[in-house]
Length: 422
Image (cartoon, rainbow, N blue to C red):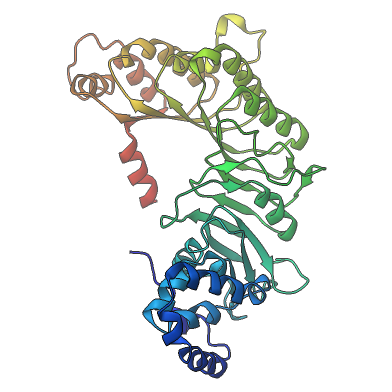
């Protein structure tokens, strides 16, 4: 159950309690006539009454006062999203981050704003180092007063389970970067990012950002990095639906030349455009240069063979520099139902691993989401855990392990459990 802002208001906002109480008493005098009006008329009255004050920065006490008059007023207030579209976060100067309880409170509050443009005003912005906010559709963040967030190092926009409609306007990224000159880590939740409502006439340069996590971008939208430059970026997580997004990501790599150390890419090619997509994907891998760690989340299908062939090192063609020549760690996470197709792409996988072992690959992890009984036996035989017949991959894995490579194969849920435990 989502937290109820009316239940948690006391510890969050102690400003002007006497004025709020007097306001509540005055409103109770109007309780009876309002309670007898149809609900639609009450909502219209509320909308007109709050239009002026709520265009400015709001405090927590104002909407909560409306909830405390009577049940009819509460029902009306909850039906008027404009009341909830502005909120001020008051953080004591001694606190450098927002607690999880406060984040849950904001998620419940802002869900009531629905499709209203939501403004979050943060007090003491100059002292704040970490900020976690609910990821909602129309989110804009403002420091209180004419300032920025000069000390903010981490901003995480996490999923808001109480409001799942719509996608987040990608214009919020540029707005956040302009306000956070020292930002190091920017993480977006699972909500989709859509095309910016306000296009930027220039490329936004941010020299401090080192870690960026943007998992979901709508398939028909441009790459979120199209108008951004991060020359200090070392860790990146990004989904790439289309050839256009890949090409724009390649332009970002050329423009930024970031010293990337770990990249997590989610390539999702469409079967009809797979050839063009894979050609652009190979170009991106070449631009990643000396990247040491790569995590791929692939869809089960014919593209897997192509990805392994891209990463293969062919000793017979020594005049050709392989993609990612400095790769030491490779993780592949397969999405979708896994069938006996495993046996079809294992030869390409084995060839890639053998070649990469000679060029410096030290860790390989393969995780699948779902397995059939027969496939479980095949994979266990692949790892030498049973006597499954005709498993041509087992000797190769045993040899790679003997040469010092760590090979780990299992289910996605096991991988996630291990990561959560670290």
